Amino acid sequence: MKLFRSVHGLSLEKDGQLYQVEQHLLSRLFRSGRGEIGEILSGIELLEKQSDLRDQLPPVLDETEIWASGVTYLRSKSARMEESEKAGGDIFYDLVYEAQRPELFFKSMGSRAVGHGGHIRVREDSSWDVPEPELTLAINAGGEIFGFTVGNDVSSRSIEGENPLYLPQAKVYRGSCALGPSLLLGRDAISQRAFIKLKIFRNDQLVFEGETDLTQLKRRFEELVEFLYRELDFAHGAMLMTGTGVVPGSDFTLSSGDRVEITIEGVGTLTNHVA
Image (tube, rainbow, N blue to C red; front, side, top):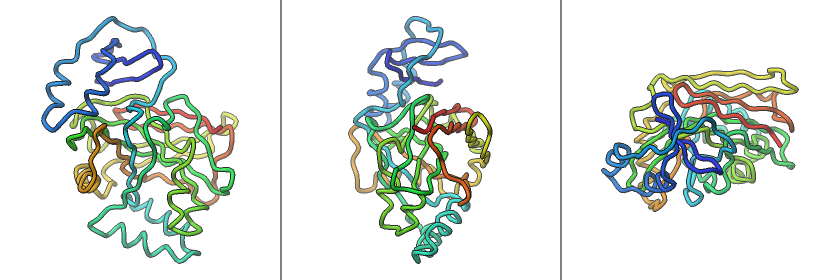
């Protein structure tokens, strides 16, 4: 089942059909306690059928925090070491990749996230900017994964490369976080070998294409969630981006007007334009 959020309310795709569902379902899922997800999912009431999805919003509560993981794929480690080499920070990413503790950082509030079809941005004070396609976990207040969505962790590599301490500025700004198009519901709903594809178009011409799959992810989902929830409480649940394994090289940077398409097998395709 896939749950969509739009300005018109919530919709559920089940067995190839689209239905309207009660407006508080998303809130119930994110704010639920441990052991409550199964009952909520089994008790979903399908209302009237719908024919299309318009004006989509990110499938997250405005009050929900969105976090991200770094250096969870070997390709990501290599890219981060490359960008930080001149500043002497390259060794840090090598250490993080091998460490027991993962890199976790705050990315956005749900209210600041961009949905499918919305506009992402690059910073005006940055010279090297890339999208980062990431499988994103939906986690309830009790620390249980109940769904998955596609995430785009838009990043300024030039700012982060100046100094690793500039990471918040490189990662957290207006238009830097996109989620969608839906929530794939159920902890076991996604294949552990699902592919992740990134395509970038400029003037309707494909200028970058890359692919990886979840077998390349170094850390387990529950491992990342455990560290995130270890010393934090999330009354409105949380979303956690699990890192990227597809990184454009240093010869590429996003430009205004580009179209970014991220596809995760079984979840869907998130499309955004660069404002």
